Length: 265
Image (tube, rainbow, N blue to C red; front, side, top):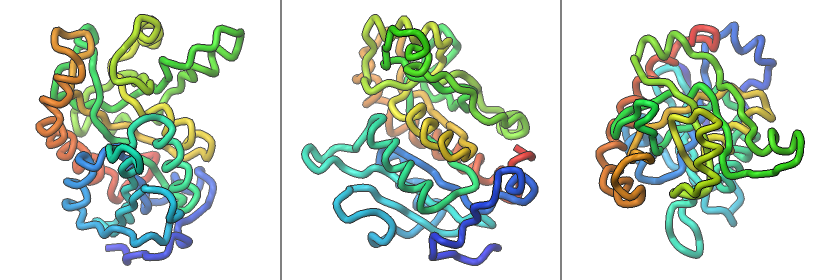
C-alpha cells in the first residue's frame, strides 16, 4: 500500500506520456452535492481537510486519504453562503476543479453525480453511465466559430477496458445551468445527440482540458427528461436510491483504476 501523503506538493507534474507508463497513484473526484459525496467519503475512510488547501472565504470542502494504492481527494463546492443549498452548476464546478487541479496535480479526475437521461436514447432511472463526449447546451452564440466554442463538444478519454469490465452504459453528456429544459436547450441537446443531461460535467471538462488531465465522467440517472413526470419531482423522488447506485458504480471504477496505468483503462 502506498504511504499516506499529507502534503499536496508530492504529486508528480511529469508529462502525460510518462504518466501513462506508471500506475495511477493520485485520484481527484469532483462532486457537486454533499449527499453524493458522503457515502464515498465513508467508504474510502477519508478525512476532511481543516482548511489548508482552499482560501478561507470559499465554502469548498476537501476530503483526503489513501485507499489501496491510491491517494484519493474528493472535493465539493459546499453550501452556498446566502441560500444554504449545494452550490450546483457550472461556475462552482469550474472554480473548485481549477483550484483542486492546480493544488493537487492529480493523475486523473473523476466527475461523478446524478443526471437526467433521455428515454429516446435508452436511459432509465437508476442507470449508470460513462460519458463518451461532453458539451454545453445553453451557451448560444450565433456567430461563426463562437457557436462551436459555446457548445464546445469534446470526446472524453477512451476507457474500453473499464467500460467492458464494469458493464456500464455509455452515452454523450450535455451540460447546462438549469434543471429544466427550454425549447432552445432541447434543440441543442438533440443536436449534441445527448443521452445524459447534467449541470457540471462540461465545466469540469473545460478546466481539465486546460491542464491536459484525463477525466472520467460517471453519471447516474435520477429522472427521465423526456418522460411523463416533472423533472424536479422525479429528481427528488429518486435522489436517495440513485445515489446508492452511483456509490456502488464509483467504488467499482476506483477499484478498477487501482494498480492500472492510464493506457490500461
